[in-house]
Every structure is written in structure tokens, then in C-alpha cells.
Length: 200
Image (tube, rainbow, N blue to C red; front, side, top):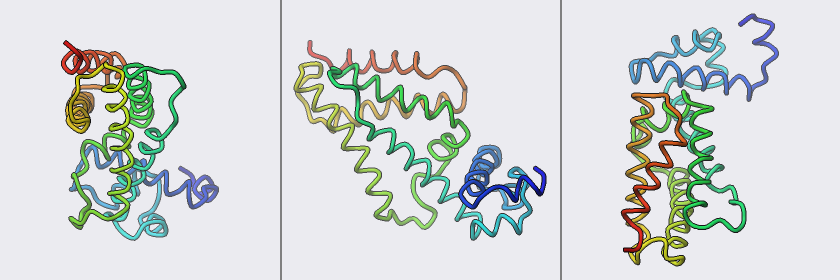
């Protein structure tokens, strides 16, 4: 990138470029990556990068938080009216798949290759708030499935955990063996889940 192009980028755009570069490098190098490698990938000098982030951990934490926040935005979108349990679940999973496919490097860095918790080991209120907001969406879905008769009577959280396990495995497979089209794979996972949890 030329100096002129770098100068035209505002603070927000520059941070986004650095986060995108960090995702690429992190997916290639993991915890061994350096600030210098991120700067090179972004087309910045190291000193320019430090104008936007304090250090490597600051970049990584911002990357993980921003991707999780964007996923929460997707999760909280109101679904079209009149959808039954399966259709509503598919609609939500398709929206998540579109985000993952459009932002593959960011998604894989934050949702597959990232450690489960923050580097400090402390789960702060922001992480808990995001987790609980997403969990509430899934619980509402499972409660709808039970109320409509699509799912057997059971603890909705058990269904959240069961579907979450399916989706986590699919995400790992897509990250390591893909990319491949996620929506057909989601259809298969959802069919298996509903058949296993449905009324008999």
C-alpha cells in the first residue's frame, strides 16, 4: 500500500485493516506471530501500527471481541415473522454461515484458532454479556421447538448444548478441511439434530 493510501485511511479503517491482517497472520502462525508480521501483512510500518494498538495482545483481544460482537449482532437480528422452529433455526444458521464465509480469516482466527478465554484468564463482564445474549437466542429457539411439538419435552439447555456441539464440530471441520459450502452442511446437521430430538 502506498503512503498516500495509508494516509487516506481514518483511524477506524486503519484498525480494521490491522485486525484483518492480524487474522491472516494468526491463522498461519498462531501465538508465534509478531507485531512486525502483522504490520507487514497490513502494509504498515511497525511504528504506524503502534498508533492504533498498544501491543500484540491488544490486537488479538480486539480481534476476538470484535468478531464475537459481530456474531451477536447477527444473532439478535429479528427473524422473519411466521417461521416455525426448523425454519427459524435454519434462517439463523444461514445468517451465521454467511458471516463466516464472507469473513473467513476473521471468523477462523476468533472462533476456531483463538483460546477459549482472554489471555488474562479472567472472563470479564463484556464476554459474559455477549455469551448470555447469544445463549438466550438459542434457548428461545429450543423453547419454541418444544412448545410447537417439534422437539420432545426436555430441558431447553440440553438442546442448546447438543446443537452447539454439532455446530462446533462442523465449524472445526470447515476451518481445517474446507472451505466448502456451509449451508448444505448446515441442512444435514439440522436434519440429524431434529430427527434425534424430535417426537417419536
